Image (cartoon, rainbow, N blue to C red; front, side, top):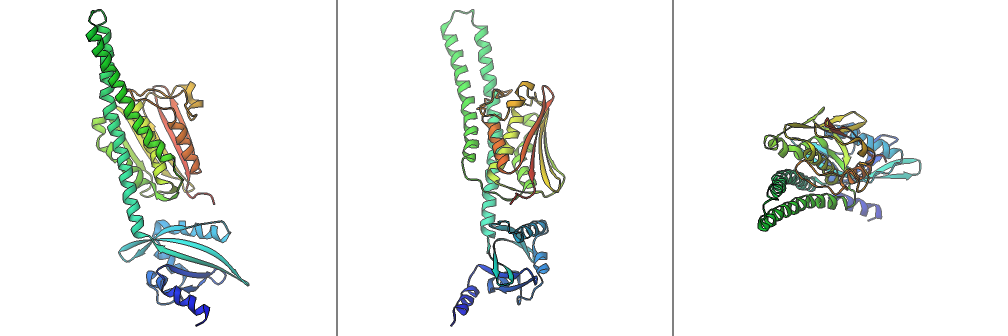
Amino acid sequence: MSSTNHLQYLADRSDVLLFTFDTVLNRFTFMNQAFQSFFGLENIDTEPVKLLEMIAPDDQMYVLSKFNAFLKQQVIEQVEFRVRRGQYQKWLRVTPYIIDENSEKLIGGQAVDITETKETIELLNNHNIKKNSILTILAHDLAGPIGTVQNLSTLLERETANINNPRIQQLTGLISKISKSNIKLIRNFLDQEFLESVGTVLFKKRVELVTKIRIATEEILKMQEELRIDFSCTANRNAIYAEIDEDKFMQVINNLITNSLKFTPDGGTIEVKITDNETDVLIVVRDSGIGIPKKYHASLFDKFSEARRTGLKGQTSTGLGMSIIKTIVEWHDGTIWFESEENKGTTFYIQLPVHSPQ
C-alpha cells in the first residue's frame, strides 16, 4: 500500500472531519467519511452553497466573512458555527489551512464536532452570569440595611453625647465599627470577584449578547420592586452577536449595573439597551441617579481615580473598577465613554465591532 493510500485509509477512519477545497474551481476535491457522514452527503460532488444553507442563518454571514478574510491570507486560527441537522443543531469548530500546490490554490481543513463541549460551557457560563447577578443584588440588599444601621448608630452617638455614660458611647461606637467592617467586607468580596476575572488570558469567541445580558439582568428584573427601581433591558433585534471573552465582558456589564444601583436613589430608573448597527454593537447603561460631578469626568477611568465615591447606601469603592472596565473594553477592540450631569443621571456607552479585526 502506497503512502497516499495509507493516508486515505487513516483519513477515512478518523472521527475528525477532513476536507480540501479548490478555490479556483469552487469545488471540494476531498472529503473523508466523517465529513460526508456529518453533513449527510453521498459523495464529494456537492455544491458549496448546499453546505452553506445547512449553516444556521445567524452564522452564515459570519462564516462567509471569515472565509473571505482567510482567502486574503489573513490569519484565522479557528471558526465556530452551528449546523442544522434536521430538527437538531450541532456545533463545529473548523481549523483551515492554505495549501499552495503547483498552480492550484486549495483550502485544507479539519473540523471537530464540539456540540457537547459547547453546551457544557454554555451551561457553566450562564450559571456564572446568574451568580454574579445574584451577588450584586445580595450586596445591594445587605449593604443598604447595614449602612442604615451605621448611620443610625452615628446619630445615636450624637444624641447621647451629653449623657455621661461611657458604656453607651462604647456600644454605639462598636455598632458603627461593625457596620463599617461588614459593608467593607461585602464590597471587597465583589471587587475581588471582579479583579480575579480580569487576571486571566483573554479568550474571545462569538457570543449572542441579547441572551447573555438578559440572563445577567434577570434577577434584577424580578426584584425591581424590592430594589425600589424601575429597571428595563431592551434590544433592537432578538439576536445580536459580537466576539467577546464572555466571562470578562459580562463582568463589565455587571459592574456598570452595580454602579447604577449604587448611585440611583429609590424610585429611580436604570435601563440597558443593546443595538445592532450592522458594523458595530452599541450597549447603553443609563440611570437617573445622582450623576458624576464635572470635576471627575476627565479622571473617571484612571486607576485609583479621585472619582471613587461611597454609594448612597454606604457601598465603598476601590477606585479600580472603571479603569479595569475601560481596559477590558479596549481588549475587545471597543470603546467606552459616558455622559453625566449631577442630579440628572449617568449614561455609559460601549461600542464593539461586529467582528474582531484580523
